[in-house]
Length: 315
Ligand code: SF4
Image 1 (cartoon, protein in one colour):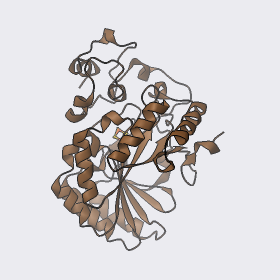
Image 2 (cartoon, rainbow, N blue to C red):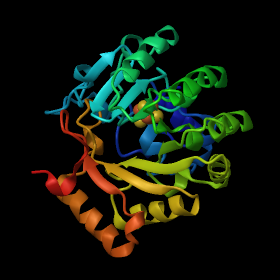
Image 3 (cartoon, rainbow, N blue to C red):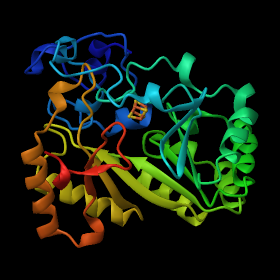
């Protein structure tokens, strides 16, 4: 889909926006359910802003990079990253159902970095040889883009690794394509015998409609622990009322807020950036308004650090 076609689908014209649109090498992609959640005729819609390619993406912003987290330096083998001592990340899929304009992997060549089906055994052998790895995280792309057949081969093999105590899946699929949460997927997750954590990615309460809530209820009924991570985005979720409403809606859907990430300095997304001082003020406002368990940890990923860095520890 082009940016112009997306605008047309939500009842807008280019002249309705306060900015230009763009067509870039990272194409616009919006699944039908998510498209239906965008308010027609609203140029400021917070969901539209996450998926519409704006002219600002083409600007050369100082300090931005194509691999802002230096992931190329953390490979354990093709398709495996080890950023932290006790966790390994499998880049299980090379595609997503939605293209988030601020994605830190928007410049990734998944053909070179993702885990090919034929390399799964080698990847699991590498993890088995590192007994301090206790958790395997499926990432991508979006790992729920894999078919149930692929998942039914991969997940039990991970669960069978003796040192793995839990499996984590990072995905936007349950909230952007809720139909992906099928009875077969739930049965697969429920039958693994190893606890499964799904870390969703939503940024605004508007993404959590009744259809999504029902899909999340199915995952919970399958015994899955649900957490959410967000990216702090200029004009989308950077005010206390919006962020607090998001946290409350997550809880109503059985999801705990986990992380709010400061934007990674990825080329093409600088217009989403929220300065550190504003992030700190937002976190403080949420602490004053919400119970502690609904306040996400505000963090930045610093390449080479032992863990995510809380924003109070940043310079
Ligand atoms: S779903 Fe995740 S990996 Fe895919 S474009 Fe969005 S942020 Fe990036």
